Image (cartoon, rainbow over all chains, first blue to last red; front, side):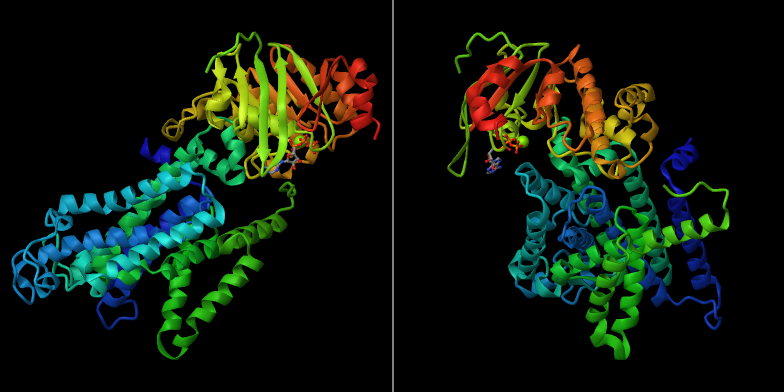
Length: 376
Length: 251
Ligand SMILES: Nc1ncnc2c1ncn2[C@@H]1O[C@H](COP(=O)(O)OP(=O)(O)OP(=O)(O)O)[C@@H](O)[C@H]1O
Ligand SMILES: [Mg+2]
């Protein structure tokens, strides 16, 4: 039943993608935990964390591709939803510290004691409860996307104007979270986490569990996105992207479709952020900075928008390059490399890396077997 | 609002539309009976497309009555989606199809049925019978192209695809803006035939510049000029009307 549904909803590239993720989930734990440290096949915990981070970025890319690639909503503020999910997780982790903080206060996180606060702000209530915290990981980005989308889509803000206000949204949040009196740790953010669900966040086992959770998160996000885009709903999304007012004249309430996909996408981004925070060990306002959201757009464009798999691939490739170029002597050139790559890919490979790779394969196969019918 | 007693599918009275001080429609009045076919002609900028924009809710008139279904519905109070739901379909002047969808999917999206965001997630529309789509495509002779991307179609084929979408939508009133622009003579003839066939069970309003096409439609003609009706009557009365010849035909 489930297998049949999967077969129906997945195309070839989707299957390859899931097989790849399954292999990752199998091999990384083996190479990290079972293969001895001296071996060439050993993967260090640092690498596991790095891979886990990329998986979270890939999830953010899938979320962004859902709204941009399929519905034409170019959000330059998706980093905000990622960061909000991250903060919700961070608040849960802060409340788990308990008396182990520097000041040893049983309830208040260190930074609040430092600010001479005596009571826990209302926004923090309930975050010691993991179920509530995980609910907030979804609810906060979802609610913000709902309110934002409600006004923006109903008043028919589209195109560049919409992109600009999404960018303004994340910028406004950046400024707000910088403020100490907001109660989210100011520019230091939230850090020094100890436990997650009762396990030490630093231990190799927990790190591996978080890595596997990130793989699972990406798989689930991909399947949800795939389910949406292969349904009639997805066809309407593409119709909106191609000719929005035509879609309206056919009787579709465009704003509702946009709102639904935007909220789902924001929640996905929130979960990605929540998985990211315990792995990197910190969340601070810089996660809201506009450049983060723009980088996410670059991943999707480079991988191939409107393909989901391409978006995830783009996130992986760009971040692998970024890691190479931001460490050591090449560090000052990263932004130039990123800019050059972006221009190169958008000019030379408008369908992204995935699109280019697929048409290359098609052409090679086409020339290999003359029996195949010629391209139209 | 005191609704006048109206016995017509579409009733426009005293409709004014102003764009930045420019009066695109000046107290326009027009009545289209249920089941009728009506051709609208008039020089560029006469307000023909603007009139369709008003009827379909894209443009709100400054004032005037825009009533549907024997005066029971005030169209100015509805938005595009609910006007489509009420049974008014539209073909645009510039052919507008969903370029990245297949020809068949374009028709599928137009097919009458639930339009909700949630219901569409659960595949409610996926069950639309293939026959209904193919029937509409057959009518406009696009069946052979059903699996091609709509963006690959020629200009004329896109025009027909739009007509197929209208057929699938099955509205009470069809507004067809310049359906034969860019078509060969043979295609134009076929389109006239097609619209007459559609007119058997739908009310149709057609905007067109091609006079031989309008003649082939064989229906009542309204000539617009500077936002209001200049003349109305049979094609022969219109073609011999001095004012019409002066502002439009004689050019
Ligand atoms: N959104 C708009 N903003 C400003 N002016 C507009 C707008 N829409 C139409 N107009 C103007 O209103 C006038 C009527 O335009 P309309 O498109 O209705 O003409 P038309 O009769 O359809 O002409 P054509 O035969 O060229 O299609 C034109 O002068 C046009 O420039
Ligand atoms: Mg026009």
